[in-house]
Length: 336
Image (tube, rainbow, N blue to C red; front, side, top):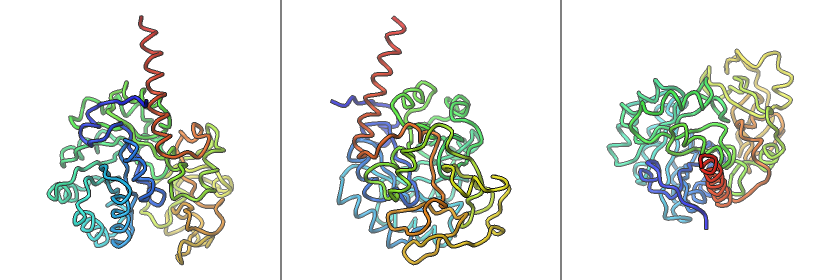
């Protein structure tokens, strides 16, 4: 039987395991979020800059698949204010259990979600923003280290940030960035976290909406195969670095830093349901994407080297918990 683990996070989120699936825009749709929650973790829908109609449909599909708690991830910083309000409105109308926000802290958005009765998770990359999010009313702080895949708010390694933030906030603290197995979970708990958030491990899951090409590139990745850069910038505000797998675009670039989205060339390399996708864009390849996948933003964290096969989300969670228990047993034995 898969071991269980009770922490301040599982109590706050009402889930069995202290494992959150990151609300990755694109890959984290209803199939993945529901699978994670049903398996005892906490699933997040990645609904960044999606239409209210799509969001409503995805929320309904999660509820069709599971009766367990889940949340919706939005990014106020990267979303036009009117669209953000429309997105938030449909989430609150549908009475989602939790909202997750990322990047800069927007106290008014937190207050709006809290007033509607939502739990609020806020992903940040520094002690200063962790304190701001808690002061704004966040119920859970997700602390992202520079090892994380996708858009990266942090500039320091997760282990350094955890030592700095643990004990400084009173709400449950979640570690995110480079964690893909049970040993990483146990290490995060030892450093003061109450749970972990995983992106890359679930991006490569069977239920992820990511394109198979993206999943296979993660599986093939070795340690050191990711790069931290602002080269993929089109469609996001300036100065928003990402972590991606190396590809021909990163290898041929004169520099990985100093790129402004308005100054990058518009070279069409794909299509997403009628919308052109550009080289240097922030879109990653999804099941519904066509084009030159190799040149797209292949998001992955430093934990990509830990992913060796496409597995169901429930299997990923079960193996993480078993690995954490095994690692704890080894540590306990060393102290006898």
